[in-house]
Image (cartoon, rainbow, N blue to C red; front, top):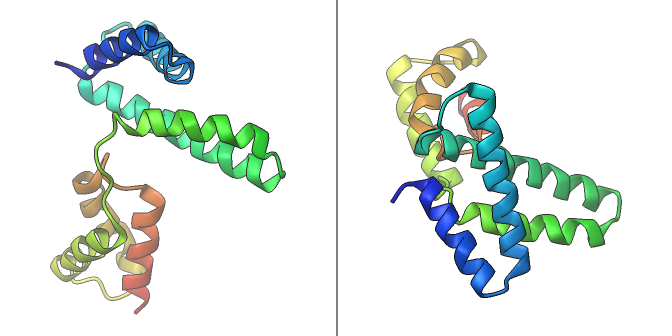
Length: 148
């Protein structure tokens, strides 16, 4: 079953269970998928839907941070709930230690010895961690390795 089919199936289950939070979040996700289909004049495959879900998750994380900084916990709570629903459909993210191990291996391959090697290392590591790690965290880990 594809990711889009899974989203539709889970929406039906949420409607049967009268789980309004999950239902509303899945409707938002499916609306974004349909909008992307229209914008790109194609039907998104599982990878495209997953990329869209990662974008949605990132938006929720940024909203949560902004609401917390503003002291608006009442607005951050629903965003957290939506993020939990979205994360069910995303692959397990790599830990900092896993990123560090991969980055160490790539730095050794590239022979990077300072900040000048940043572009070469990032160019090799990002395709390997796409969809599995946050780009900011990867950047931070690589900077630490190259600075040491």
